[in-house]
Amino acid sequence: MYASLKSIGSYVPEKIMTNKDFEKIVDTSDEWIEQRTGIKERRIATADQATSDLGAKAAEKAIQRAGINKDEIDLVICATLSPDHLCMPSTACLISDKVGIRNCMAFDVAAACSGFVYMLSIAKAFIESGAKKNILLVGAEKISSLVDYTDRGTCILFGDGAGAAIIGVTEDKNEAIIDIHASADGKYSDLLITPGCGSKYPCRADNVDDKLQYIKMAGNEVFKVAVRTLTKDVVDILKTNGITSDDIDLFVPHQANLRIIEAVRNKLNFPKEKTVFTVGKYGNTSAASIPMAINDAYEAGRLKKGDLMLLDTFGGGFTWASGLVRFGGD
Ligand code: ACO
Image (tube, rainbow, N blue to C red; front, side):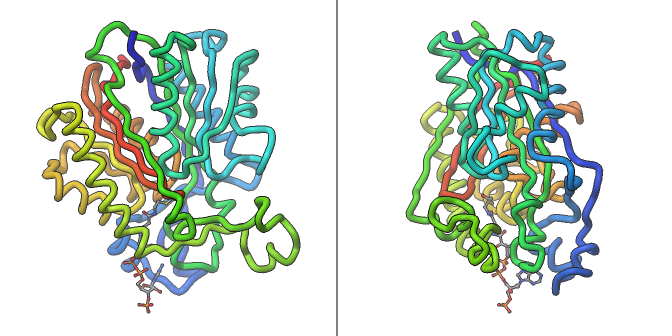
């Protein structure tokens, strides 16, 4: 028995925020943002849309494309750094309710931008052990709720959105999730952090006045570690599995910054036409970034059953993960 990525879906809010819109609120320019990040625009959720609303819409699509009934789903996992509620209930519980999935385990994963690939690793283990048969994975983010719109170093980077997948069972290795490498190193935790509204700096007026509830990032230092780690991780997973870059049909990197993607792609000699780029239109959507990018390729007709995808991601923690995944959907 192997685990297989049977379907993919995504959802983005309608509202588009362009680089020009940022020129009106912080000291920046369309040119600076595009040259340094590759981002042209990003989606922003409405005030009454929470992360679970975005996630539920992506989940509905993935379930429908998998051709299964909701009551066949036996595990729901959501990866997010912008949960509806800080502690409880989990966003996975809320998505289950909104989609109409009852009586199965539901929990969240906190691994920042690496969340979706972390979930693939968990789902693979559950399927291969025989414990579960149809797992709904949702990467969903309303990062606009965590962004300080006076900090030009971070606010221009992020967007809202959601991606979802159904992981099911297959006996065919040509439709299987081949391998996932996932890791972390907490010594870098201060470089990318939302310090406030947890147990260390509770949601008190003084901490909120100090803006501790917002994302803080040492962008340049994160950039260097990200390029180094993402490249090494890809080299390792290819080598371990005796696979070369020529065998890869689609390279799906985390969509944080075009310069990071290009640095990794050039070091590994991946052709542009085999790489997925969505950062220009969605910005960094953290845990939603990889499934949204897979969905983009799927809807563009670039992904067919059996195609081998290489996933590569990096985020706060630091966390990082890569995956060799054959597409098992129709
Ligand atoms: N507009 C204009 N100028 C700016 C802006 C802006 N929006 N932001 C920063 N600057 C300025 C800085 O103040 C600095 O000015 P100074 O030289 O006068 O001090 C100058 O531009 C250079 O700043 P750097 O931070 O060195 O710029 P850099 O080229 O590194 O680009 C960026 C910044 C885009 C944030 C980049 O470092 C980056 O993408 N980092 C990695 C992000 C990432 O991958 N995060 C991981 C995943 S996210 C997650 O897990 C949630």
